[in-house]
Image 1 (cartoon, rainbow, N blue to C red):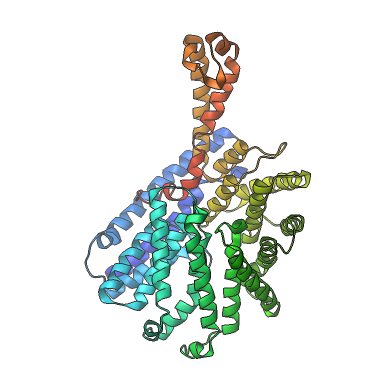
Image 2: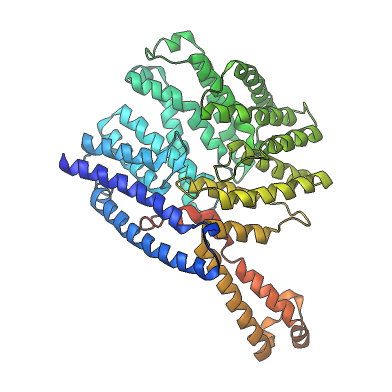
Length: 496
């Protein structure tokens, strides 16, 4: 028992130290006087990070990896401690996130144990950890073999969990597991539509299956005979309303999932029903208040996608939603609806083109995004802040006179990972210096750069070349933003 208590205490220390590491890796510039002060702060912080990371790695090596990498049976105390650790690695209530890859590996190990013992309660718990981790790692939107694997692993976990709704399997579950399954099914189905697929046509089957599954689930939770199977107290009307909201949100990102006309009509019908149902729900918690704020966006988007309003009305609604948060304190977390609103607008403008009103609006949006990334706290919500920032960059539309793509990337890197920002400036200065001397020593090395065809042209355009080299070097780590969460987790050694 002492050993297990020690494990629990050390895992709690791992979580707290991971949060400290996140904060130390991105110090607030407002507390620093000049560049030298900034460099000194970074050096001191990274020395502290090194000590915390060493202790974190020792914790994992002692209490986690031996069992994680073995096929030994897990005792009930270990399962309980790991489950608590996993909930802290990804807290669904606050969507705060500490370490997606570690959560994924722990979930997979517990699933193996559940399969060995045929324990449905443990199976559901492990599946939920796998779904949470693979969703987060997939939603970061970078492309690699691992991400495709995570996507399929998460999708398989969702299907396994929804399979537990089959009558015989559901009836065999304990009451608390039934309750948990009802609470999580629609949410988990929704999550895996949020991952942007590379090929709409290729992935259309998945979108149809998710919509079909959610409509089936909606009918199930509306069935009085099914409701009687769970003696625990459940507000079935509220549960049904949440499912309607999840369905209405399936067309996020300008119908990125590629629903066809019949699918869009079905989703619009649910959006209209959702709008009516929420009239009778009091926003008595932050979670419900956040959903209520999303309702106008969900409804108007589905109106637009089904041809019930034109693009000017839709843009006007999107601008109005953003303007309603004009006085929001960006030292707090960005409301989900604001980032969703911005993404919808960028997708719309990228597809349909810009007018003057769009340009003025996007200039304001970019300025507020910069405020957000610099003022928002870099705590255990780090991964979600990065998703917001990187999605804005992925969808960036250039607006003359507003902040440029390069400056936006520089500003975000400076906020999230100051050491990379300073590294970029150093590399750019060195590259310019090298280019300056190489042009004078061996100008033929630059034939073809900027379309220059001979040595005399190269010498005449030396300043342009040096400037080009400087900015190219300045941009060389921009791609790091899309993979920053796993590779910047200094609290442990890198995994896959």
